[in-house]
Amino acid sequence: QVQLVESGGGLVQPGGSLRLSCAASGRMIFSIKDMGWYRQAPGKERELVASITNGGTPEYADSVKGRFTISRDNAVNTVYLQMNSLKPEDTAIYYCNAASVWLRERSDYWGQGTQVTVSS
Image (cartoon, rainbow, N blue to C red):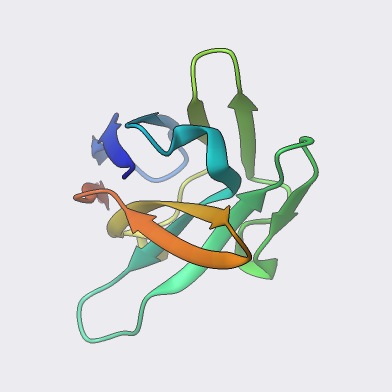
């Protein structure tokens, strides 16, 4: 299986920055393809923030383009989310996701979530 451990959340003022990290481990780690970050605000559905392929190609939600940067270090099985120019509407629990493909079957793994609060 795959285990994901997130870190880096916290409280920040509007306009500030945070960097989230997500380290993957487990016996199926070799099967991980895409990794990404999702978020869920109170009363809202979970939404994709950013994703990155095994080869390093990123995709972003329109709401974070130009402010957030996703990156990945395959040598240490870690994905990062650099969040700049944070807004109150970025407040949410952020979840790391890893998509594993093995024998043509896809499995999604999730971290425990880390709280990001943007407030003055």
